[in-house]
Amino acid sequence: MGPVPEGLSAFVRARLDDEDRDADLFHEPSCRIAVAAGGTRPSGPLVPAGCDCPVPERMHDEVGLKRLTVRDLEGRIERAPDTAPSLDAVIALMALKALALEYASHPRWREEWRP
Ligand SMILES: [Zn+2]
Image (cartoon, rainbow, N blue to C red; front, side, top):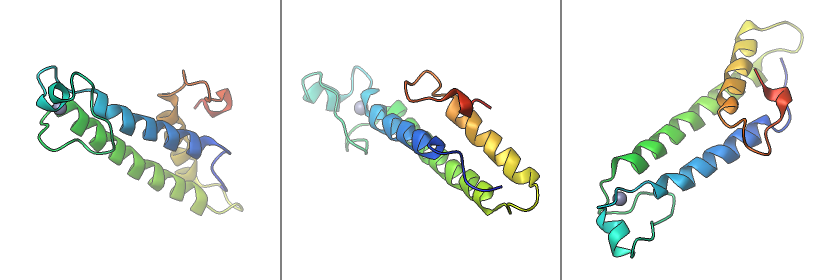
């Protein structure tokens, strides 16, 4: 089927990077990490030690799963031969576009990616 539409993979990966970063904003009000920081939420790719807030960890896990899914879908699209139609590649491309659709309100979204 050939390559993934130009820019689509980079767009999705950048949004996942955003989510990974923003995950650390979602601490509980009582979190002693947040309290110790004077109400300023810690930031970074990992949930800080001593924090047992459920949301940041769950969001990091979700981002990790989405990254694996994107990699799998890209592989299925790229591996399909150009010479013959591949139902699997078509389905994989639709799934990648559906994954990207979650970020359709982002300024870098392109309507041509809409599934
Ligand atoms: Zn916390």
